[in-house]
Length: 481
Ligand SMILES: Cc1cc2nc3c(=O)[nH]c(=O)nc-3n(C[C@H](O)[C@H](O)[C@H](O)COP(=O)(O)O)c2cc1C
Ligand SMILES: [Mn+2]
Image (cartoon, rainbow, N blue to C red; front, side):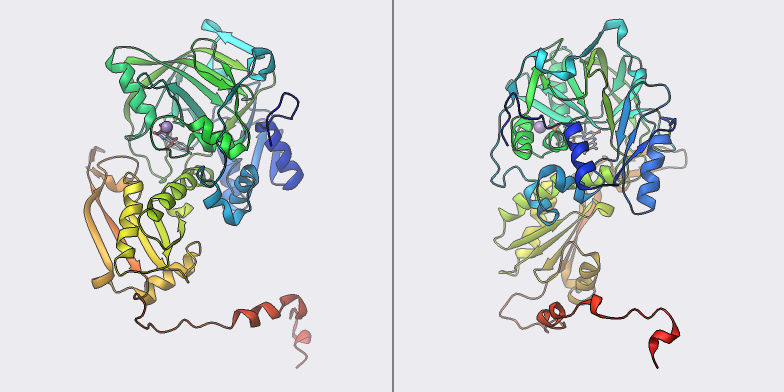
Protein backbone atom coordinates (compact mmCIF):
# COMPACT_ATOMS: atom_id res chain seq x y z
CA UNK A 1 0.00 0.00 0.00
CA UNK A 2 1.29 3.47 -0.73
CA UNK A 3 0.42 6.59 1.17
CA UNK A 4 -1.29 9.16 -0.94
CA UNK A 5 -3.37 12.11 0.16
CA UNK A 6 -6.61 10.20 -0.49
CA UNK A 7 -5.77 6.68 0.71
CA UNK A 8 -7.23 6.00 4.15
CA UNK A 9 -4.58 6.55 6.80
CA UNK A 10 -3.33 3.54 8.71
CA UNK A 11 -3.62 4.52 12.32
CA UNK A 12 -5.08 3.33 15.62
CA UNK A 13 -8.63 3.77 14.30
CA UNK A 14 -8.02 1.85 11.08
CA UNK A 15 -6.62 -1.01 13.16
CA UNK A 16 -9.58 -0.97 15.56
CA UNK A 17 -11.86 -1.14 12.52
CA UNK A 18 -9.84 -4.05 11.14
CA UNK A 19 -10.22 -5.96 14.42
CA UNK A 20 -13.96 -5.29 14.45
CA UNK A 21 -14.24 -6.63 10.89
CA UNK A 22 -11.83 -9.54 10.98
CA UNK A 23 -11.81 -10.70 14.59
CA UNK A 24 -15.39 -10.04 15.70
CA UNK A 25 -15.94 -10.13 19.46
CA UNK A 26 -12.28 -9.81 20.44
CA UNK A 27 -12.50 -6.11 21.16
CA UNK A 28 -14.93 -5.34 23.97
CA UNK A 29 -16.35 -1.88 24.68
CA UNK A 30 -16.69 -0.88 28.31
CA UNK A 31 -19.30 1.87 28.65
CA UNK A 32 -19.66 1.71 32.43
CA UNK A 33 -17.60 4.19 34.52
CA UNK A 34 -14.10 2.80 34.96
CA UNK A 35 -11.63 3.80 37.66
CA UNK A 36 -8.21 4.44 36.09
CA UNK A 37 -6.76 2.98 39.31
CA UNK A 38 -6.77 -0.79 38.62
CA UNK A 39 -10.13 -0.56 36.79
CA UNK A 40 -8.62 -0.64 33.29
CA UNK A 41 -5.99 -3.28 34.01
CA UNK A 42 -8.54 -5.38 35.91
CA UNK A 43 -10.27 -6.11 32.60
CA UNK A 44 -7.01 -7.10 30.90
CA UNK A 45 -6.07 -9.33 33.86
CA UNK A 46 -9.55 -10.87 33.86
CA UNK A 47 -9.27 -11.65 30.14
CA UNK A 48 -5.78 -13.12 30.60
CA UNK A 49 -7.04 -15.25 33.49
CA UNK A 50 -9.79 -16.63 31.29
CA UNK A 51 -7.37 -17.23 28.43
CA UNK A 52 -9.29 -14.85 26.17
CA UNK A 53 -6.87 -11.92 25.96
CA UNK A 54 -9.51 -9.49 24.71
CA UNK A 55 -8.73 -5.91 23.81
CA UNK A 56 -10.84 -3.22 25.52
CA UNK A 57 -12.13 0.20 24.56
CA UNK A 58 -13.16 2.23 27.62
CA UNK A 59 -15.56 5.06 26.84
CA UNK A 60 -16.01 6.39 30.38
CA UNK A 61 -12.80 6.53 32.37
CA UNK A 62 -13.48 8.46 35.59
CA UNK A 63 -11.78 11.87 35.57
CA UNK A 64 -11.07 12.01 31.84
CA UNK A 65 -12.97 12.98 28.72
CA UNK A 66 -10.80 10.75 26.56
CA UNK A 67 -11.45 7.15 25.66
CA UNK A 68 -8.82 4.55 26.42
CA UNK A 69 -7.91 1.43 24.45
CA UNK A 70 -6.02 -1.27 26.36
CA UNK A 71 -4.60 -4.76 25.84
CA UNK A 72 -4.79 -4.24 22.08
CA UNK A 73 -1.72 -6.34 21.18
CA UNK A 74 -2.06 -9.14 23.72
CA UNK A 75 -2.25 -11.93 21.13
CA UNK A 76 -0.03 -13.13 18.31
CA UNK A 77 -3.14 -13.24 16.09
CA UNK A 78 -3.89 -9.52 16.49
CA UNK A 79 -0.21 -8.65 16.09
CA UNK A 80 -0.07 -10.73 12.89
CA UNK A 81 -3.20 -8.96 11.62
CA UNK A 82 -1.59 -5.59 12.34
CA UNK A 83 1.61 -6.48 10.49
CA UNK A 84 -0.16 -8.23 7.65
CA UNK A 85 1.45 -11.66 8.02
CA UNK A 86 0.17 -15.16 8.83
CA UNK A 87 0.62 -15.83 12.53
CA UNK A 88 3.12 -18.68 11.87
CA UNK A 89 5.39 -16.23 10.06
CA UNK A 90 5.06 -13.50 12.63
CA UNK A 91 8.37 -13.98 14.35
CA UNK A 92 10.29 -13.80 11.11
CA UNK A 93 8.22 -11.27 9.21
CA UNK A 94 8.27 -8.78 12.03
CA UNK A 95 11.89 -8.27 11.15
CA UNK A 96 12.50 -5.12 9.17
CA UNK A 97 15.25 -7.01 7.34
CA UNK A 98 12.89 -9.60 5.89
CA UNK A 99 12.86 -8.06 2.44
CA UNK A 100 10.40 -5.34 3.35
CA UNK A 101 11.16 -1.99 1.82
CA UNK A 102 11.97 0.72 4.28
CA UNK A 103 10.04 3.95 3.82
CA UNK A 104 11.33 7.28 5.01
CA UNK A 105 8.71 9.38 6.79
CA UNK A 106 6.81 11.91 4.68
CA UNK A 107 5.96 15.31 6.15
CA UNK A 108 2.41 16.60 5.76
CA UNK A 109 0.94 20.00 6.60
CA UNK A 110 -0.68 20.89 9.93
CA UNK A 111 -4.06 21.00 8.20
CA UNK A 112 -3.66 17.36 7.19
CA UNK A 113 -2.63 16.31 10.70
CA UNK A 114 -5.52 15.31 12.99
CA UNK A 115 -3.15 15.27 15.96
CA UNK A 116 -3.09 19.09 15.75
CA UNK A 117 -6.87 19.52 16.18
CA UNK A 118 -6.43 20.53 19.83
CA UNK A 119 -3.36 22.32 21.16
CA UNK A 120 -2.73 22.95 24.86
CA UNK A 121 0.25 25.08 25.80
CA UNK A 122 1.87 26.19 29.05
CA UNK A 123 -0.60 26.34 31.91
CA UNK A 124 -3.31 24.57 29.89
CA UNK A 125 -1.15 21.44 29.92
CA UNK A 126 -2.56 18.90 32.35
CA UNK A 127 -1.49 15.25 32.23
CA UNK A 128 -4.20 14.61 34.84
CA UNK A 129 -6.85 14.96 32.11
CA UNK A 130 -5.58 11.88 30.28
CA UNK A 131 -6.99 8.46 31.31
CA UNK A 132 -3.60 7.19 32.51
CA UNK A 133 -3.98 4.00 34.58
CA UNK A 134 -2.45 2.76 37.79
CA UNK A 135 -1.66 -0.77 36.60
CA UNK A 136 -0.65 -3.10 39.41
CA UNK A 137 -1.14 -3.35 43.15
CA UNK A 138 2.16 -1.91 44.41
CA UNK A 139 2.79 0.60 41.60
CA UNK A 140 3.87 4.04 42.77
CA UNK A 141 1.31 5.90 40.64
CA UNK A 142 0.00 6.35 37.12
CA UNK A 143 2.32 5.30 34.30
CA UNK A 144 2.36 5.84 30.55
CA UNK A 145 3.20 2.46 28.98
CA UNK A 146 2.34 2.87 25.30
CA UNK A 147 4.02 6.21 24.70
CA UNK A 148 6.70 6.50 22.02
CA UNK A 149 9.36 9.10 22.77
CA UNK A 150 11.01 10.76 19.78
CA UNK A 151 14.37 12.49 20.28
CA UNK A 152 17.16 13.78 18.06
CA UNK A 153 20.72 12.61 18.56
CA UNK A 154 22.68 15.87 18.99
CA UNK A 155 25.78 14.33 17.41
CA UNK A 156 24.42 12.72 14.23
CA UNK A 157 21.09 14.56 13.93
CA UNK A 158 19.27 11.21 13.61
CA UNK A 159 15.71 10.90 14.93
CA UNK A 160 15.39 8.07 17.45
CA UNK A 161 12.27 6.55 19.00
CA UNK A 162 11.52 4.10 21.77
CA UNK A 163 8.92 3.19 24.36
CA UNK A 164 10.01 4.08 27.90
CA UNK A 165 7.82 3.97 30.97
CA UNK A 166 6.79 7.37 32.37
CA UNK A 167 5.72 7.81 35.98
CA UNK A 168 3.27 10.74 36.16
CA UNK A 169 4.34 13.15 38.94
CA UNK A 170 2.00 16.13 38.44
CA UNK A 171 0.17 18.10 35.73
CA UNK A 172 3.38 18.86 33.85
CA UNK A 173 6.06 16.46 35.03
CA UNK A 174 6.79 12.79 34.53
CA UNK A 175 9.73 10.44 34.85
CA UNK A 176 11.57 8.52 32.14
CA UNK A 177 13.20 5.16 32.68
CA UNK A 178 15.96 4.60 30.13
CA UNK A 179 17.54 1.18 30.44
CA UNK A 180 21.29 0.70 30.12
CA UNK A 181 22.06 0.19 26.46
CA UNK A 182 19.02 1.90 24.97
CA UNK A 183 19.56 4.89 22.71
CA UNK A 184 17.03 7.07 24.52
CA UNK A 185 19.25 7.26 27.60
CA UNK A 186 22.40 7.74 25.54
CA UNK A 187 20.85 10.74 23.76
CA UNK A 188 19.64 12.28 27.02
CA UNK A 189 23.12 11.89 28.53
CA UNK A 190 24.68 13.64 25.50
CA UNK A 191 22.47 16.70 25.98
CA UNK A 192 22.85 16.62 29.76
CA UNK A 193 26.66 16.54 29.48
CA UNK A 194 26.44 19.86 27.64
CA UNK A 195 24.07 21.14 30.33
CA UNK A 196 21.21 21.28 27.80
CA UNK A 197 17.63 20.03 28.07
CA UNK A 198 16.72 17.21 25.66
CA UNK A 199 13.78 18.19 23.43
CA UNK A 200 11.27 15.32 23.26
CA UNK A 201 7.95 14.62 21.58
CA UNK A 202 6.00 11.64 22.84
CA UNK A 203 3.21 10.16 20.74
CA UNK A 204 0.38 7.99 22.07
CA UNK A 205 -2.13 6.00 20.01
CA UNK A 206 -1.15 4.92 16.52
CA UNK A 207 -1.14 1.89 14.25
CA UNK A 208 0.68 -1.07 15.92
CA UNK A 209 3.33 -0.89 13.19
CA UNK A 210 4.38 2.51 14.57
CA UNK A 211 4.80 1.00 18.03
CA UNK A 212 6.61 -2.09 16.78
CA UNK A 213 8.91 0.10 14.65
CA UNK A 214 9.76 2.06 17.79
CA UNK A 215 10.76 -1.08 19.69
CA UNK A 216 12.64 -2.68 16.77
CA UNK A 217 16.20 -3.47 17.86
CA UNK A 218 18.12 -1.49 15.28
CA UNK A 219 21.88 -1.19 15.03
CA UNK A 220 22.91 2.41 15.75
CA UNK A 221 20.85 5.39 16.83
CA UNK A 222 17.73 6.18 14.76
CA UNK A 223 15.86 4.45 11.96
CA UNK A 224 12.68 3.67 13.91
CA UNK A 225 10.35 5.69 11.64
CA UNK A 226 11.85 3.85 8.65
CA UNK A 227 11.34 0.50 10.43
CA UNK A 228 7.74 1.49 11.16
CA UNK A 229 7.32 2.36 7.47
CA UNK A 230 8.63 -1.09 6.53
CA UNK A 231 6.15 -2.78 8.87
CA UNK A 232 3.31 -0.53 7.68
CA UNK A 233 4.15 -0.97 4.00
CA UNK A 234 3.93 2.80 3.60
CA UNK A 235 5.71 5.88 4.91
CA UNK A 236 4.73 7.21 8.33
CA UNK A 237 3.23 10.63 7.73
CA UNK A 238 4.69 13.17 10.10
CA UNK A 239 4.19 16.79 11.07
CA UNK A 240 6.45 19.26 12.86
CA UNK A 241 6.19 19.57 16.65
CA UNK A 242 4.94 22.84 18.15
CA UNK A 243 8.04 23.53 20.22
CA UNK A 244 10.95 21.77 18.49
CA UNK A 245 12.12 20.46 15.14
CA UNK A 246 11.08 16.90 16.06
CA UNK A 247 8.75 15.23 13.56
CA UNK A 248 5.74 13.45 15.07
CA UNK A 249 3.19 11.14 13.41
CA UNK A 250 0.36 13.23 11.95
CA UNK A 251 -2.17 10.43 12.55
CA UNK A 252 -1.29 9.77 16.18
CA UNK A 253 -4.02 10.40 18.73
CA UNK A 254 -2.02 12.47 21.23
CA UNK A 255 1.43 14.11 21.34
CA UNK A 256 3.18 15.38 24.48
CA UNK A 257 6.00 17.84 23.91
CA UNK A 258 8.64 18.98 26.33
CA UNK A 259 12.17 18.44 27.54
CA UNK A 260 14.11 16.00 29.67
CA UNK A 261 15.67 18.29 32.26
CA UNK A 262 19.49 18.11 32.21
CA UNK A 263 20.18 18.30 35.93
CA UNK A 264 17.17 16.95 37.77
CA UNK A 265 16.23 13.46 38.93
CA UNK A 266 13.35 12.27 41.00
CA UNK A 267 12.44 9.07 42.82
CA UNK A 268 10.59 6.90 40.27
CA UNK A 269 8.54 3.72 40.64
CA UNK A 270 7.84 1.23 41.99
CA UNK A 271 6.43 -0.26 38.79
CA UNK A 272 5.67 -3.88 37.94
CA UNK A 273 7.88 -4.72 34.96
CA UNK A 274 7.68 -7.58 32.44
CA UNK A 275 9.47 -10.13 34.68
CA UNK A 276 6.52 -9.72 37.05
CA UNK A 277 8.50 -8.27 39.95
CA UNK A 278 9.22 -4.85 41.41
CA UNK A 279 12.87 -3.98 40.89
CA UNK A 280 14.90 -1.01 39.64
CA UNK A 281 13.01 1.84 41.21
CA UNK A 282 15.09 4.82 42.27
CA UNK A 283 16.11 8.22 40.93
CA UNK A 284 15.38 8.81 37.23
CA UNK A 285 15.44 11.80 34.85
CA UNK A 286 12.48 14.20 34.86
CA UNK A 287 10.50 15.25 31.76
CA UNK A 288 8.69 18.61 31.77
CA UNK A 289 5.70 18.76 29.40
CA UNK A 290 5.18 22.18 27.78
CA UNK A 291 2.51 21.38 25.17
CA UNK A 292 -0.02 18.67 24.37
CA UNK A 293 -1.68 18.28 20.98
CA UNK A 294 -4.42 15.79 20.18
CA UNK A 295 -7.42 14.88 18.08
CA UNK A 296 -10.70 16.45 19.19
CA UNK A 297 -11.98 12.97 20.16
CA UNK A 298 -8.62 11.45 21.03
CA UNK A 299 -8.27 7.82 22.10
CA UNK A 300 -5.55 7.18 24.67
CA UNK A 301 -3.67 3.87 24.50
CA UNK A 302 -2.42 1.75 27.39
CA UNK A 303 -0.27 -1.40 27.35
CA UNK A 304 -1.14 -3.89 30.08
CA UNK A 305 2.05 -3.62 32.17
CA UNK A 306 3.50 -6.93 33.37
CA UNK A 307 0.75 -8.68 31.40
CA UNK A 308 0.80 -10.76 28.26
CA UNK A 309 0.71 -7.67 26.02
CA UNK A 310 3.85 -6.23 27.65
CA UNK A 311 5.72 -9.53 27.27
CA UNK A 312 4.59 -10.12 23.69
CA UNK A 313 5.60 -6.65 22.51
CA UNK A 314 8.94 -7.04 24.22
CA UNK A 315 9.63 -10.60 23.03
CA UNK A 316 8.92 -10.12 19.30
CA UNK A 317 11.69 -7.64 18.50
CA UNK A 318 14.09 -9.81 20.51
CA UNK A 319 13.26 -12.88 18.48
CA UNK A 320 14.07 -10.89 15.39
CA UNK A 321 17.43 -9.64 16.62
CA UNK A 322 18.39 -13.06 18.04
CA UNK A 323 17.47 -14.60 14.70
CA UNK A 324 19.76 -12.18 12.90
CA UNK A 325 22.70 -12.70 15.26
CA UNK A 326 22.48 -16.48 15.42
CA UNK A 327 22.11 -16.88 11.65
CA UNK A 328 25.23 -14.80 11.23
CA UNK A 329 27.02 -17.29 13.47
CA UNK A 330 25.84 -20.75 12.35
CA UNK A 331 24.41 -21.89 9.04
CA UNK A 332 21.64 -24.12 10.34
CA UNK A 333 19.34 -21.95 12.47
CA UNK A 334 15.73 -23.11 12.02
CA UNK A 335 13.68 -21.17 14.59
CA UNK A 336 13.96 -18.86 17.57
CA UNK A 337 11.39 -18.71 20.33
CA UNK A 338 11.41 -16.33 23.26
CA UNK A 339 8.46 -17.72 25.25
CA UNK A 340 6.06 -15.09 26.53
CA UNK A 341 5.86 -16.68 29.96
CA UNK A 342 9.65 -16.69 30.35
CA UNK A 343 11.12 -13.87 28.32
CA UNK A 344 14.53 -14.33 29.92
CA UNK A 345 14.75 -17.70 28.15
CA UNK A 346 15.16 -18.55 24.52
CA UNK A 347 14.83 -21.77 22.54
CA UNK A 348 16.83 -22.25 19.34
CA UNK A 349 16.13 -25.13 17.00
CA UNK A 350 19.02 -25.88 14.68
CA UNK A 351 20.11 -28.15 11.89
CA UNK A 352 23.30 -29.32 13.57
CA UNK A 353 26.27 -29.57 11.27
CA UNK A 354 29.16 -29.31 13.71
CA UNK A 355 29.59 -30.41 17.33
CA UNK A 356 30.07 -26.83 18.46
CA UNK A 357 27.04 -25.38 16.63
CA UNK A 358 24.82 -25.48 19.76
CA UNK A 359 27.33 -23.53 21.88
CA UNK A 360 28.09 -21.01 19.17
CA UNK A 361 24.39 -20.47 18.55
CA UNK A 362 23.69 -20.11 22.28
CA UNK A 363 26.46 -17.55 22.82
CA UNK A 364 25.30 -15.56 19.80
CA UNK A 365 21.80 -15.47 21.31
CA UNK A 366 23.07 -14.45 24.75
CA UNK A 367 25.19 -11.68 23.27
CA UNK A 368 22.22 -10.26 21.38
CA UNK A 369 20.51 -9.40 24.60
CA UNK A 370 22.82 -9.73 27.58
CA UNK A 371 20.59 -7.56 29.81
CA UNK A 372 17.59 -9.89 29.60
CA UNK A 373 18.52 -13.35 28.32
CA UNK A 374 20.00 -15.79 30.81
CA UNK A 375 18.89 -19.21 29.65
CA UNK A 376 19.23 -20.71 26.18
CA UNK A 377 17.98 -24.17 25.25
CA UNK A 378 19.19 -25.57 21.94
CA UNK A 379 17.16 -28.33 20.30
CA UNK A 380 17.48 -30.32 17.11
CA UNK A 381 15.43 -29.28 14.09
CA UNK A 382 12.88 -32.07 14.64
CA UNK A 383 11.73 -30.35 17.86
CA UNK A 384 9.19 -27.52 17.67
CA UNK A 385 10.81 -24.58 19.47
CA UNK A 386 7.34 -23.09 20.04
CA UNK A 387 5.98 -26.15 21.84
CA UNK A 388 7.08 -26.24 25.49
CA UNK A 389 6.10 -29.90 25.77
CA UNK A 390 8.45 -30.86 22.94
CA UNK A 391 11.27 -28.74 24.35
CA UNK A 392 10.90 -30.32 27.80
CA UNK A 393 10.84 -33.76 26.14
CA UNK A 394 14.08 -33.00 24.29
CA UNK A 395 15.78 -31.81 27.50
CA UNK A 396 14.59 -34.95 29.27
CA UNK A 397 15.65 -37.39 26.57
CA UNK A 398 18.65 -35.88 24.81
CA UNK A 399 20.54 -33.84 27.40
CA UNK A 400 23.11 -35.11 29.85
CA UNK A 401 23.72 -32.42 32.44
CA UNK A 402 27.42 -33.21 32.95
CA UNK A 403 28.23 -32.83 29.27
CA UNK A 404 25.44 -30.68 27.91
CA UNK A 405 24.78 -28.06 30.57
CA UNK A 406 27.02 -25.04 30.73
CA UNK A 407 26.83 -22.42 33.46
CA UNK A 408 28.34 -19.06 32.58
CA UNK A 409 28.99 -17.35 35.94
CA UNK A 410 28.46 -13.62 36.34
CA UNK A 411 27.13 -13.18 32.81
CA UNK A 412 23.89 -11.29 33.48
CA UNK A 413 23.44 -7.91 35.13
CA UNK A 414 24.41 -6.21 37.35
CA UNK A 415 20.98 -4.77 38.09
CA UNK A 416 18.32 -4.23 35.46
CA UNK A 417 14.83 -5.65 35.56
CA UNK A 418 15.58 -9.28 36.48
CA UNK A 419 15.22 -10.00 40.21
CA UNK A 420 18.20 -12.41 40.12
CA UNK A 421 20.47 -9.50 39.27
CA UNK A 422 19.99 -7.83 42.65
CA UNK A 423 20.77 -8.97 46.17
CA UNK A 424 18.41 -8.27 49.03
CA UNK A 425 18.56 -7.63 52.74
CA UNK A 426 16.20 -7.68 55.68
CA UNK A 427 15.75 -3.88 55.53
CA UNK A 428 14.37 -4.03 51.99
CA UNK A 429 17.63 -2.83 50.44
CA UNK A 430 18.50 -3.88 46.88
CA UNK A 431 22.09 -3.98 45.63
CA UNK A 432 22.92 -4.72 42.00
CA UNK A 433 24.73 -8.02 41.40
CA UNK A 434 25.53 -10.29 38.48
CA UNK A 435 23.92 -13.67 37.98
CA UNK A 436 24.81 -16.64 35.83
CA UNK A 437 23.56 -17.61 32.41
CA UNK A 438 22.87 -21.22 31.50
CA UNK A 439 23.00 -23.09 28.21
CA UNK A 440 21.18 -26.41 27.77
CA UNK A 441 22.26 -28.41 24.75
CA UNK A 442 19.36 -30.78 24.10
CA UNK A 443 20.39 -31.58 20.53
CA UNK A 444 21.23 -35.05 19.25
CA UNK A 445 24.83 -35.92 18.37
CA UNK A 446 26.13 -34.59 15.08
CA UNK A 447 25.67 -36.88 12.04
CA UNK A 448 26.98 -39.37 10.98
CA UNK A 449 26.64 -40.61 14.61
CA UNK A 450 23.44 -42.62 14.78
CA UNK A 451 21.11 -41.61 17.63
CA UNK A 452 17.97 -43.68 18.36
CA UNK A 453 15.20 -42.66 15.97
CA UNK A 454 12.16 -40.79 17.24
CA UNK A 455 8.86 -42.61 17.64
CA UNK A 456 5.89 -41.40 15.67
CA UNK A 457 2.82 -42.54 13.78
CA UNK A 458 3.52 -41.88 10.07
CA UNK A 459 2.29 -38.33 9.37
CA UNK A 460 0.42 -39.45 6.20
CA UNK A 461 -1.57 -41.84 8.35
CA UNK A 462 -2.44 -39.04 10.79
CA UNK A 463 -3.49 -36.79 7.90
CA UNK A 464 -5.85 -39.44 6.54
CA UNK A 465 -8.10 -39.55 9.62
CA UNK A 466 -10.46 -36.90 11.01
CA UNK A 467 -12.06 -36.70 14.45
CA UNK A 468 -15.27 -35.47 12.82
CA UNK A 469 -15.73 -38.99 11.42
CA UNK A 470 -15.97 -40.42 14.94
CA UNK A 471 -18.82 -40.58 17.45
CA UNK A 472 -18.42 -38.80 20.78
CA UNK A 473 -19.45 -41.10 23.61
CA UNK A 474 -21.79 -38.94 25.69
CA UNK A 475 -23.53 -41.68 27.70
CA UNK A 476 -23.18 -45.40 28.39
CA UNK A 477 -25.74 -46.04 25.61
CA UNK A 478 -23.37 -44.52 23.03
CA UNK A 479 -20.87 -47.26 23.86
CA UNK A 480 -23.17 -49.81 22.14
CA UNK A 481 -21.59 -52.56 24.20
C1 LIG B 1 5.67 -2.00 26.56
C2 LIG B 1 7.13 -1.69 26.54
C3 LIG B 1 7.70 -0.95 27.57
C4 LIG B 1 9.05 -0.63 27.56
N1 LIG B 1 9.57 0.11 28.58
C5 LIG B 1 10.86 0.48 28.54
C6 LIG B 1 11.42 1.32 29.56
O1 LIG B 1 10.74 1.73 30.51
N2 LIG B 1 12.71 1.67 29.46
C7 LIG B 1 13.50 1.26 28.42
O2 LIG B 1 14.66 1.63 28.36
N3 LIG B 1 13.02 0.44 27.45
C8 LIG B 1 11.72 0.05 27.50
N4 LIG B 1 11.22 -0.75 26.51
C9 LIG B 1 12.11 -1.26 25.46
C10 LIG B 1 12.48 -0.20 24.45
O3 LIG B 1 11.37 0.54 24.03
C11 LIG B 1 13.09 -0.86 23.22
O4 LIG B 1 14.17 -1.66 23.61
C12 LIG B 1 13.56 0.13 22.19
O5 LIG B 1 14.10 -0.56 21.09
C13 LIG B 1 14.61 1.07 22.73
O6 LIG B 1 14.95 1.97 21.72
P1 LIG B 1 16.29 2.80 21.77
O7 LIG B 1 17.45 1.84 21.90
O8 LIG B 1 16.29 3.55 20.50
O9 LIG B 1 16.23 3.69 22.99
C14 LIG B 1 9.86 -1.08 26.50
C15 LIG B 1 9.31 -1.82 25.47
C16 LIG B 1 7.96 -2.13 25.48
C17 LIG B 1 7.38 -2.93 24.35
MN1 LIG C 1 17.16 3.49 18.56
